[in-house]
Image (cartoon, rainbow, N blue to C red; front, side, top):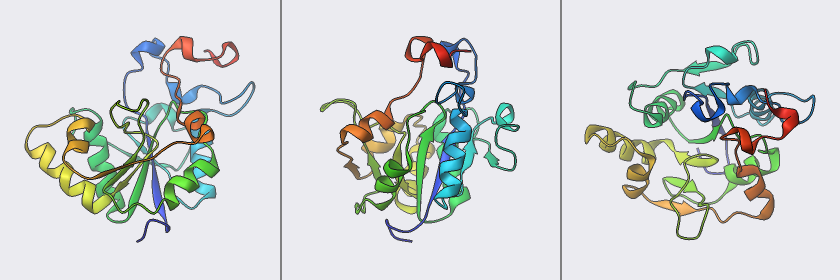
Length: 198
């Protein structure tokens, strides 16, 4: 599978949403009276032939996206790297694109650019600032190359995406203004417009 062919869309739904007072962030609406973030992301994945899957405890989203495969972290209880390992095992080959369930501004065009990027690196990821760390979401992973690095990290007890990124080749995705807007997330109540607050 090449960078321009298919990819799988992993929607990470784990986490306790403590900064959102426990409210599932993926249920927030993408617009006034609009669809939920997870439903929006699932629709994009289906329209693009990217086989969307939930990564993490997705029970609360079952009614929003019936029939979507949900992957439990494997190994469990180690944070999102366990989810990434489960996503790699499910995909088996090619590329996966990881997004978070609190990213309401992801568009089809942005996902297509990410999927079609010519990089052959293990990871294609962006930074918030020029000297900042690579961000794990709205990022593309090569299942075999990133998977091999992840296996070593897990064997050595590493639990952070930054350890993974330091152990494999990463191409920086230089974001356009549209891509940077799509990459923003709703992590806390102050990030969320009043019409979208629960």
